Length: 304
Image (cartoon, rainbow, N blue to C red; front, top):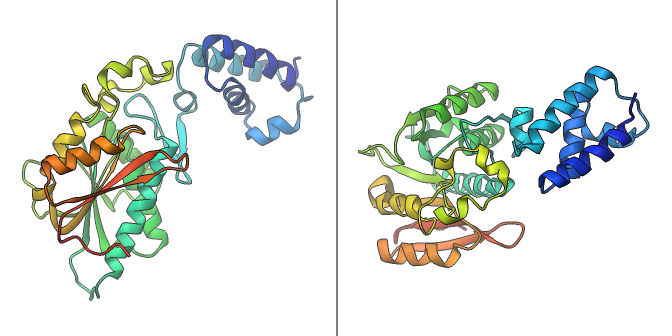
């Protein structure tokens, strides 16, 4: 029987030749899956023998990964903001950089809840997650607010144009015990009439330029193009949402929009053109790249 070390050595070479951007990590994660252990255990026992059944399972997963299929789809889940979310080709795989959007949304929500006394019976803070996909942002935010004992003070509505993606999002909401705390709505960006308007709008919309989609790593070809293609400049869908913000937000409301790493200047110019008098600041991710645009009208509340 082959050992862990032997299987990893050949797997890494196969995946490297197949074009994987992380052949070593992919191999370790998939072998751990076949063995039913975590990756740390795999690394700690390179001499361990691998049985025939486990070897066959590992081989089957390697074939899928070598064809370009994302590891997250093979495993059936993706870690995001401390949660394990079910993923499949119905929706985009949550990216680590999107965790910044959740962090900022949590901070913004708590600032608004603390900004003025909210007596019992007050209208909940209304939050929209536009383009929810797998539900990652809405669910992660709901879980974070539940941890802060603040979930009863908000109403979260998650929207997507894809009915299939919404089904996946509902499954994830059930899995994390907040299915009754997030409402899922099929809509192209926002419903035709937003009544009442929202206090906070969150969005991780497609922002890859059309000409660049086919140049993405092959794993992206397994994901819905609808969730990636942002039009000629990557901002078509975001531009449509920005144009609707005045009617969709309460006075003093705010929007947090994830953008591409090279779109910091473009989003500021877009806001200046479409929403004169509105503010637009851009938060960078851990790599120092522009990642989330914060938009607010002239009467926006202080962010502290």
